[in-house]
Each structure stands twice: as structure tokens, then as C-alpha cells.
Amino acid sequence: MQEYDAVVIGAGVTGCAIARELARYDLRICVVEKCEDVCCGTSKANSAIIHAGYDAKPGSLKAKLNVMGNSMMDELSRKLDFHFKRIGSLVVMYEGDDRKKLEELYDRGVKNGVENLRIIEKDELMKLEPNLADTAVAALWAPGAGIVCPFGMTVALAENAYDNGAEFMFDTEVLDIKGFASGYEITVRKTDSDDAGTVCIKTRSVINAAGVYADEIHNMVSGELLNIRARRGCYFLLDKQSGNFVNHVIFTLPTEKGKGILTSPTVHGNLIVGPDALDTEDKESTCTTAVELDEIRAAVNRNLKKPPMKTVITSFAGLRATEAGGDFCIGEVKDASFFFDAAGIESPGLSAAPAVGKTVAVEVASKLGAKEKAEFKDSRKGIPEPASMTMEERNALIAQDPAYGNIICRCEGISEGEIVNSIRRSLGARSLDGVKRRVRAGMGRCQAGFCSPRTMEILARELKVPFDSITKSGGRSRLIPEERLNEKYR
Image 1: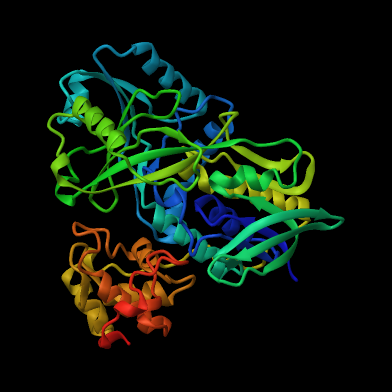
Image 2: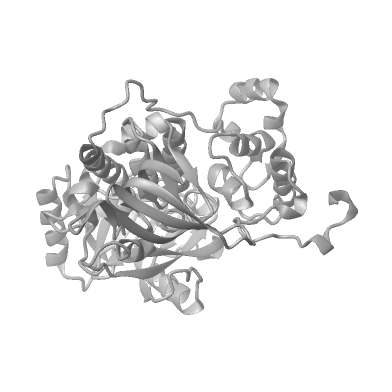
């Protein structure tokens, strides 16, 4: 039986942020994740927005941790070397909208401590965003909002936690949790094996960061039941030729189900549009539907002048974990000592993640009586990006390692050196999606149509496994059955 001081369930951005902060302490830590990698759930399919903090109800955990997390983002992105830009956001009011709702948002933001908020009128608004529909009347301007790479942020947090001693168990599903005198026994099953055997993990404390499944984990130990709904949101991703169609994050007035359909640049130069909001009983349902996508397209056509929807390169959907109470559920569970929730983490969960990590880790460490380590590595270096370098820098990198001069993904300009680095580093990629999340190979215009075979070859070579064993996203998601292999790959 493996024994730990703290087990984090879930390797999304919340779980990885908690693991990184716990790694500051003299504790034995393990992160348990049912999927094959970090960032496989909500954290990989969202709007990639760092919200300013005006939307959440004053006094709520969402409000407090959003503002706190936003303030931590500059330093965190610098130390952990992931993409983040403060471009500001606009909540746009159109003709027929209720101005009082815009003013209420402003008042909320002021109460929440959001700095530099202003309501701007049409003339100033149209100068900032000339492609808004002519029916735009006014907007709430929040210069502190930003955009981030959610994959890069999650991977960076996980790698830094791992480099500071945290262990990770992937393809590991939690089946049951039972309390005993000095902690908990967690029964898990490997999901990447045909062997149905189970293993027990013993731990002094449990941190529940299981996303849309956090209620199921919580309800294994507590009589005060949680109820989390999966809320699906569909998106369009547009080609980089449309990436500068808007300059800021553009919101409409929010509804009870969310912040409405947004349009925003991404840190990698694309344009993202969405999401809608549809509650679903299926917590694995990340399909897109024609009806939902048509509704998003119609909303964008109302909000913008001639939006470049012909440049869409893909659509996707993500799930948000919506708790019945409407707020984050964070902290030690009343009737389950040493069991801590980080549940109901929907928007602004990505923005709040650094603050959630710090808040939960301090509470857990205090409960365990843990002391901070004498040495903690608070930084990590990301994968070199030749496409963003000067020609001199790029030539120097290629001279050091010629693999950085061999382009594999033509759409995104991703080299063999970057892919190899993504596999060899801490918690390295083991699948096509794992490579994609780390270096964007396959995220471009052709959506992996050309680079997949070469990326698979590199994965097989680096992992020393058969070509036909390479998967899209772990488990049984093999791309080529053995009988389809040609002689080259046998």
C-alpha cells in the first residue's frame, strides 16, 4: 500500500495549482488522475480568459479568488514561463439592453476590488473596437483582464509541482474512499490496462479537485451531499488570419447561465468565439451540435460587423462544473476531517486557480502541521519556441540542436526539437494530444492532417514503443490497428 500525506484527486488546472503550492511543504504528495495526462477535462476546453473580477457576487469565493488569482498571474507566468497577456475586456451593451445591468456590473467590480473599471460610451468604444455592430451603445471597460494558454499554464504548474517532489498517477480512477483513524484509504483502478485489479492508497488527507466529478468524490465521504451539473459550452476557433479582428475580450451582458457569447483573440494569434450553455446529465458529453453552433454563429453576427466565420478551422466543446449553490466549494468538509474540497470550479476557475491553489494548500498544510521546505524551486523553463525567436536566436538554437530546424507541423511551424522536448521533459507527452497541448503540433489550419504520422513516429522512437501503440489521447484511442500497418512500421 502506497502512503502519502496528501492526495490530490484531479490533474486539471485547479489540482495542479494545489499540488504546486503543497509542494512548498515537507509533505509526500500524489496527484491521481483518471485520464492519461494533465489538462484533459475542463482545463483544456474553455475560453482561456483571465477575468478581471467584476462579475461574481461580492463576498463570494468566486469574487475573492478571481481578483486574487488575477493579481498573481503576471509573476506566475513569468516564473513558470507560459503565455499570458493583459489585453483588457469589454462587456458591451447593445440597443435594447438594460443599462442598469451594466451599471450593476460596475458596482460589483468596485465592491470586489477590481481596479480601473470604467463605463465608456459609444464613441470611445468604437475607437477601441471598430468591428462591433453599430447597435453597440456602451461598455464596461476592464483593462486588467487578460488571455492565457490554459494548456501551457496547467502543464507548467504540474511540471513545477513534479520537480518539487509531487508524484503523479495517470490513468488511475478513484473507485472508493474510506476514512479510518489516521486518514483515508483510496481504492483506485488503472484505466489503461485490461487488468481489472484494484490498488489502495493510504493518505493522511485528501484534496478533491475532480471537476465535474467532484460531487461523486465528495459524496463518498460526506453526508452533506454535493450536486454538480455538467454545463456544456461549444466554441469556434478561427484561423490566425482573423486573430486581430478584435483587440480585446468582447463580452455581452451576462445571463444566469454565464457570461454569454464572447469573442477574443488568443495568446497564439487565433480568434475564439463562444461558448453557449447547455446543462447535460452526461459528464463525458463534449460533442458539438449543429443547433448549438448555429446559435453561437447567430449571436456573433448580431454582436459584430461581418465576423470572419468563414475562417473557422475547428469547433469544440468543454464542460463546466456548476454547483447548485452557485459558488466555489472550497475548504475542509464539515463531517469529513482532513478531506478538502476544491469543487464547483466553473468560470472564473481558470483565473482563480493560483489563488485556489494557495488557499487550499495553506489550509491543508496547517491541518497537517507541515513546515515549509528549506528549498523550493519556484520557477521552470518552458520549451523553446523557434517561431517566436529572432533569426539569430533561431540559428543559434539549430546549431546547438539541428532537430529545431526540422519542421514537422507546417501550420504552426513546430519543429522536431520542440516535439522531442515535450516528450523528454518532466511529465512528458505520451500521446498526440499530449504533444499538442505542450507545443501546439496539430492545432493549426489542417488540424493535424499532415503532421500526425511524423509526430507518431517521433513518439514511438522516443518512448521506445511500437508505432501502432501510439494513441490520440491514451487508453484505447489507438489511431492505427495492427492489421493496417504497412511494412515500414512493423
